[in-house]
Image 1 (spheres, one colour):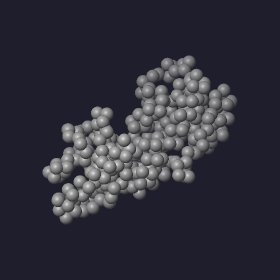
Image 2: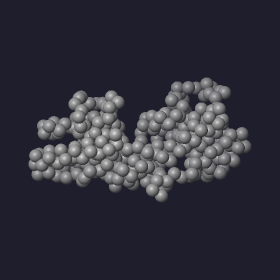
Image 3: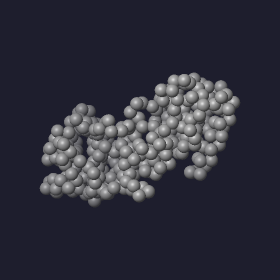
Image 4: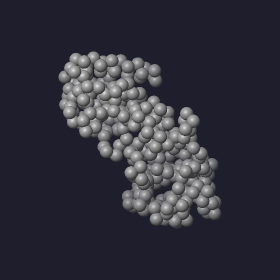
Length: 312
């Protein structure tokens, strides 16, 4: 997939190289790349086939509304998911660079002028232009006047409720990773470098990796989770603790993701490792002794292995 960073002129492909290329672009921020977003990406690919175009995404590299919720996916994660859905181009544009444009300017200067769109796809709640005055109905009209088309995607529902990034954040905050996975179409995951911890797990024969989430990253509620870690293409069952590790440290204000990878032995420090959360097993608990902690972790390991075997 080719990524074009339009706001900084930091392009892998210059605008003039798009001459003669038709683009079918899905529009939006796509945080989480959930089932609703997947519907847009599929439609962009279908419209590309219908119009002899190439499927693309037009999106923001950062959240246009950072105060509204924590981030479900990083930009690199989103780009990987776009490519997995068959998208060929990703057009990135900073929100501050387009927020003052009128709807007409957005269509003429950005979508047609820079992205060479022939067809666009957007969700039922898509807004654009200064003051968010642009609606899907207006976008349809403006594109039609310019011999382009719009395909509007209705809301996608799971268990009778619309799928949205806000709903997924709420589910993760409650620790309901199973319901979040149904909305995402895959288990929720975080990808972070492995850092050095206190090495307590190794002293009791249950080594772990430690990862520190950033402030803006959405993580599931504190607790113990059956999880999966994929290393060199192989998926391993795992047990992940999210929280302050009350049996290990008194630094209760410092968030931590600590994972025991079942059946794996190797050096992962400084490696970027992705942990996928399958289901919440229990609350985080303070234990009176290391023996009690070890016994409970062994129970968690058996529960995670059982959970893992059911999805193979």
